[in-house]
Length: 308
Length: 156
Image (cartoon, rainbow over all chains, first blue to last red; front, side, top):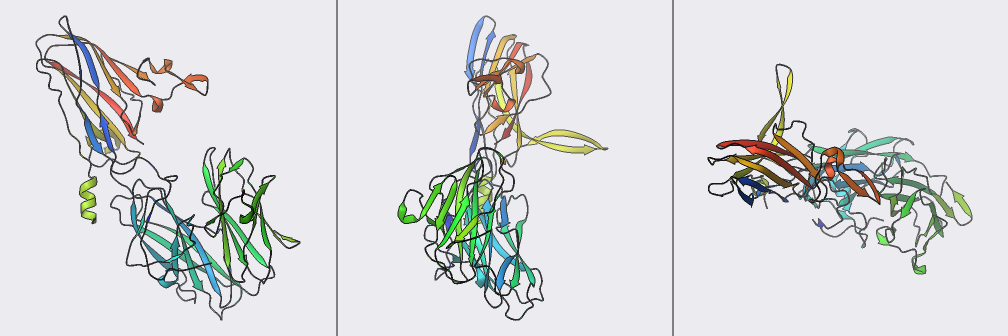
């Protein structure tokens, strides 16, 4: 589902400040007080002039792999390693990406021509080729999705694994760590016995009541099939956030029949518009957590067959 | 904007301002940051000039109240709202001769064990981070003397 733009593009993401931490950079903090007293028998009252200072920016980028387990990819086909980078600092961050091929001698080496960026919730579904010469600009609280779209070797043993590390190096002067990174892993498979390979992840593992959590379900189509319907139980004690459902970045509403999505008895059902072999379809939605959450795997129904 | 310009624009600045009140009580407030030092294996907290203020940092305002007149001042009451974008941090060290009280609305002040907040219809003891105003009461400030009270805050 990667639809690259023709030319590289640097963009300022105007996303929510959901994950931003702390007072925004540049904020002025002002202190003043009043005093009343008696001097002799006379009463006085006045206000102390303000003392001010500004909050400076610090960088706090978080890079995570969106898959806990190896991404399965077929010999000679493309593999897709999804990552997410969130700016948890208090200002607009400027950072550069770097990929490291952990096993230098294998044939899985990634080049920058295979790195694409996007941000969660992009309506036009574009994945923009990353240009290493230009930093990415990310507003406080915003996230981007980074996908490494790497062609698998055609001549390696089945079950061969390879890891790729994605690093984000902030250019901001004050930072908690020099760089933040995550590792994604490929695993070469033969032709899968399953028509569909599913993975479901969230950006957090421990949640608190009142927290908003985004979930990502990747539907990897392995065989020629039609009429793919995702059935995903809404997590216990989680409240679906209206309007948050997206399929490949396109908003779907559960109220609109044309969107082919519904929630009945806390089961989120989404019918895919298409199901091309070798493609990965991404379904995302947000939940408001009432209390500590347990993440359950989704179910896929393909015609009359249900795969877990 | 290059990095140099960004640095220049974000460097924290602090100013000390004395209330110009002629022959009356003068107040000033200077923000400091806490720096932990080790001397002969002993840990100590020192107040240093605030240079870079970042979220989570503890900032202590040293409020200096000076009586430059030739007569004693009495019944001094200083009300210091907790600055916006900060929370109050309970200060373990109290200044002799200063009674400190707290408020969650700027109207009713009391000692920490008697400050309550209405939480969804239930009154409970307020936490320090919920205080909105601090009041310092000083019975007497002698002629040509000064006293300091610290307001400890943490940047949100």
